[in-house]
Each structure stands twice: as structure tokens, then as C-alpha cells.
Amino acid sequence: MEQVTDSETEQLQQLLAQAAEQSAQKKVMPVVKMIAAQQLVIMELMQMLVDSGTVHAEDIAARMRHLMEHTDSKDMAARALFDQVRSRFATQ
Image 1: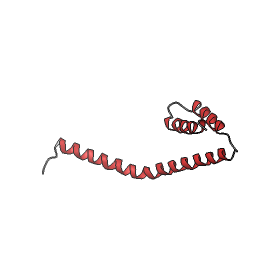
Image 2 (image 1 turned 30 degrees about the vertical axis):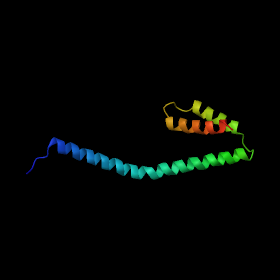
Image 3 (image 1 turned 180 degrees about the vertical axis):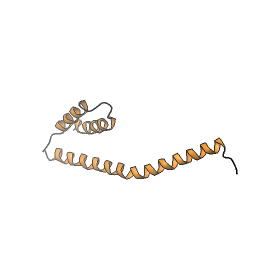
Image 4 (image 1 turned 180 degrees about the horizontal axis):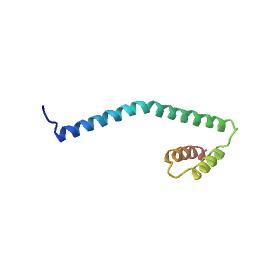
């Protein structure tokens, strides 16, 4: 019986890790795309409210600033989203 070398074992481990990562990405990507689409829809709805005069852009910007100030500094995804919305409506 042939003995497997350390190099072959390492290569197999790398291939298995790569396959696992690709499988996980295939499962996660539809969720990521859905979340991105939801964010776009909400951004457009907020823009419609601003355009109709129902809500003022500066009120949205102030609310996002408030949310950023009260969100855990480690929650970078939420803070980035709040900042993106804030900057869009702060310039209107």
C-alpha cells in the first residue's frame, strides 16, 4: 500500500477547504443579493418620500447620524449602511 506524503495531505486539505468555501459562497450569495436588493428598494422608497415632501432629507440624514452614534462601533456593516444613507440624503 502506498503511503501518502505530507505534501499530498496538505494539497488535499487545501482542495477540501477550497471546495467547502465555494459551497458556502453558493449558499450565501443569494442571501447577500437579496439583502442588497432590499436596501436599494428602501433607499428608493425614502427618496420617494423626500421627493413628495412627506419627509425632509435632512431629517433622514439626522436620523442616520443618530443611529450611527448609538450603534456598536464593532458593527461596521450597520454603521457603513447608516453612513451611506446619511451621505445620500445630507447632500439634498
